[in-house]
Image 1 (cartoon, one colour):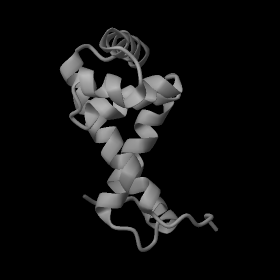
Image 2: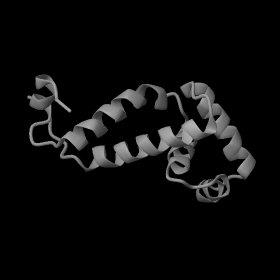
Image 3: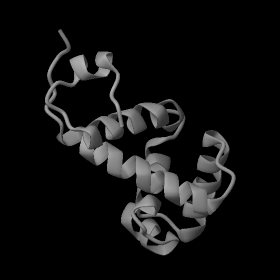
Image 4: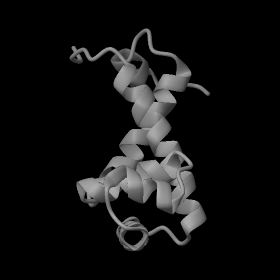
Length: 108
């Protein structure tokens, strides 16, 4: 992947995988911002491969509430299936984790 010069200037010393993570987070952020804190947690937990029951236990709600959250997430993010929600949650959760590990320094 060739990185545009403007991105290289902003992220000097950051690898291509990290730049990919940054780009993924930025692409998803505008839709993830539509989610409540609990919906974000459900989105990421399901993306980690947690089932509905495990996700429900992790956040202290019933399985039917997780299903309701998942339905809300799909509607708010315009996701057409539960499988795709899980895939997007996995991609986003991994990218956020990598993004948070990057050194935080202001752009010059």
